[in-house]
Length: 394
Image (cartoon, rainbow, N blue to C red; front, side, top):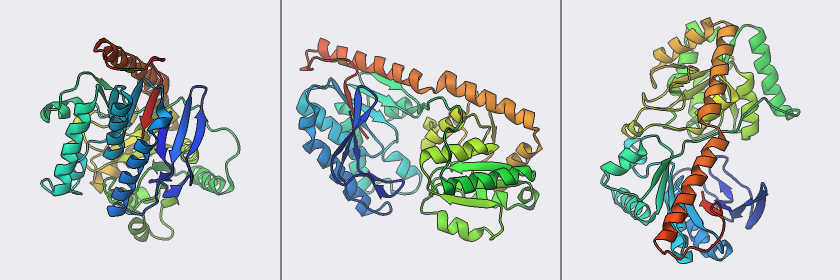
């Protein structure tokens, strides 16, 4: 079972007003807990995080008979709630580190290194790791971070983000999406290379230099950038683009629709401003999705291990530097269709071999089995059941 908030932070929508259980496959289900909505990243979001954590603890009676509880860290208090529920139910707790809190916020300039909030989050991090029977980390080098902080764990596993195999869209697109796809196709017929960025338009993504690169005269008449997503920086970026510009803002769309647009584009684009915390590596969902869809990638991000590494399916540019990004765009423009198809095949193959959902899930399941077995050996009061009967708090 997966417990999640009814409020979607990225879409800024509430998916359910009451607790709703939705089946996922034959053995899993999603339970959405009623959570308050908010705007932005201020105090209202913090209150929403605390509220969700409290609802998780209150829902612990629904979790009878589980063997292990996983707390994931898109926000740290969900993981704290998971650790508390695991302790109350007498089962092992596994901490899944997706974001390094508060280190990422500090290095991105969103928090001061010695503020009260920062010190609180460091204490939360230390307590959560210390409560875990095992740690699963997404950034490739997060184990180094834990060592540097003196946070030792009984067992650890690197499990990167993954994506299912994508063999192309099925079914007819919605009318609005159809208009976007038709426009992309028309641009390609007129000789443009179409690039697509899908994701949040926020401070860390730093899309200003990307937009500037596409407005460069040597690029503008040959390439178009389609941006799928929303965020606090969107309005400012749109104001910089001429009405007849070659940067198209689609807004927030469901993931399946974003996949259709990426699939139709010639090149997928990733951009992330550098920060010290990224020395621990990157495993962004969007890059894994780009690879699974089978797209050549323009990677403009920190020079650290990431899903494009060793793929042969990407060209690199310096993040935050329009000239470097424009040069990479120009190199893609100069490629033949056959060269792009070869890169697409390498992307597909790299995703299948290294980031398939099936392979990562199997590795994750074996790790959970080892954690549960170790808990049994240590005479922890672990209820009987199957090794994969787990709870994930996200």
